Length: 328
Image (cartoon, rainbow, N blue to C red):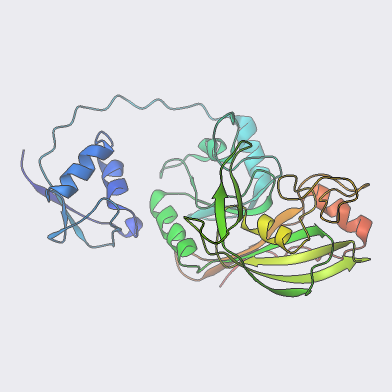
């Protein structure tokens, strides 16, 4: 066995070095990769690197002699025809690089404790030459709307880099209990993760809190109903967990149907439940503008889910139909 080298491909832009190794040498453990980096056995363009180093096309990775047991033959999972039909119904746009889906309410983006059915798992039905498609970002279980799926790992890395650098413009629609004052502005309130039962939750950071994350949201009131309910356009400038839900609650206008962040006590001005309207979460990823991996910018809009469309009709809100996807 001898030292070899391997060039980073165009499809591997911004891929972490440890993930690059697991792609090409799946029998390697994370511990082995970290040890080779720590001892200088692995180098990129002759320089010592860490496992988290992100790669660029054309770079050369030094690969030390590897003693690897042969991998067992992979088991091909049967395609779930029902999952394929459900995914087909969600597709807003697709090409050789990615899918854009309109995620329904109640479908988790990824698996977790007690979650057997989720979008990430359903993507096995779309497996192609580049493997199983990969989620690029997430939406909460009960948030609906635009979500991007990459066909290959390389495309996923490019899109993930765009999300990290804020090159992606995200627009959400929400119906909230109350009407914010002022009717538009920027929310600049840092967030912190909260301990306790009931799953992942966050709250507004207090002085002295550790691991605080800055969070910014631009908002604008598009319409309102007798100051009791309002239709907001939300543009998150950061991508924190539950950012929009906590920020709306911080204005005294929680998102309709948001049980965790809207008080449920009767006659409470911050109640997220309104008699006669759906109790589902009224938060929808309406529009996404994202740099396309093959150049240009892709813009995709998603129509309202049924429960929000019904609320809009009841309140007299006039929502325009989604525009057709366009790449410029």
